[in-house]
Every structure is written in C-alpha cells, then in structure tokens.
Length: 262
Figure (cartoon, rainbow, N blue to C red):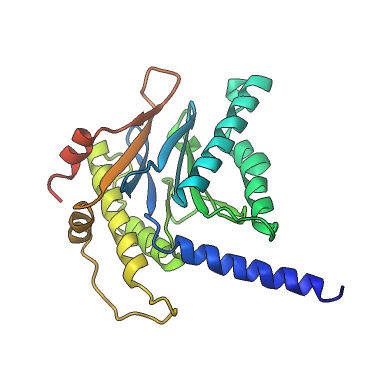
C-alpha cells in the first residue's frame, strides 16, 4: 500500500514523457491581433485544426486528430449549454476553460488506466474592444495560461516543444511593431512565426535531448519548403463583421495573395 502513491507518480511522469514525445513535431499554432480583430493560423496537411466554438470564441490545436475533435466537441457543448441555461452574453472563454475544459483534461491525464488526450489547445475570444480580447493556452494536463508577455497587444503560440514555443514568442516580440497592422501583414507575420516554431521543433534538439548545432532560421525559406506538401489554414474573429458570429475561415485565394511575396 505504501508504494502505491509512488507508482502513481511514476506513471504520471511516464505519461507526461509519452505525450510530450507525441506532440514534439505537431504543427504550431499562432494567435495574433490585427486592426480588426484576431487571427489564428497553422499549417495543415488534411485535417482541420482551426474551428469556431461560439459567436466570439475560436479554437485551434495540435495533437492527435481524434483528441482534437473530442475537445472541440467538449468546448462546443459547454458553450451552448452555457448560452441556453444562462445567456449568450454569459458564454465566456474564462468560464469554458476554468469550469469545463481544464477539469476534463486534468481528469483524463490523471486517470492512468485510461488513454490520455494527446492535445494542446489555443483558444481566442474577441472582446468588444481590443483591450478585452483574450487568448488562452490549454495543455493536455489541464494547466492553462493567458497571454501575458511583454506587450500590451494579445498574442500567443502553441508548439510541440518548449524551446520551439519560446523561439516563436521571441520572434513575435521582436517583430510585433504595428498593433494596427492589416490582415495581410498579420498573415505574413503569423506564417513566418509558424515557420520559426516548426523549424525549431524539428532541429532544435535531438530525440535524446542533446543540444543541436546552432542554425540560422530563414522563415520564408522554411515556409516555402513546407507548403510544397501542406497548406496554410487561417481564420479570423472580425470585430466589424455585422453578423453575431464573428468567426470567418480565410479561403486559399485570400491567404495566397497575402503570402505571395514570401
């Protein structure tokens, strides 16, 4: 009996190591503000990674497609129950994460006799004003973090490794000089940030955890190489959109036009 807690701790550690290894080469996600709202961007092969959850809330993720879909449905169900039982205005990202999604992920992670959810999630909520926009990163163990970095403008990123994520944040902080940028400029910045993260995830460390040789990252070159077999998937939450639902998927023509010079 005395050994049981230690076995549980060991199982949790092994579980975390397994999930981190599965997520390592997942396609990064970028959430970025622009003049009329928020942009979410990733690069996909076939399965979608960016979705609408509710009128002003969007969802993007990396991980196993089945687990992404499971958590997407959890988010949608929670939002609609909240809207029905209370009011549409009461559906907030804070409540969805704190009282629904985070506990569900924590429970799945800690029940060591069941399969874990291999997923890392980014959620964005459009406020009435830019200062009220919110971006939250939700991890597979139920832990979450809001966008709190050295800028007044909200942006956040997901990546398969911590060093890839940090490289993306560093790149954004260095190049995020225009909070009133248009959508085309936001698409370019987000796409290049994605390329920084993907390149770092692949080449930053070996599987054994040893430091790789330093390498200069050329985001445009990395992006062109990946787009030979993948496509950019992007969506916006538009503040000026007349409809109640502010979410809009960008079509290929719109994305290609913005990225044609890269």
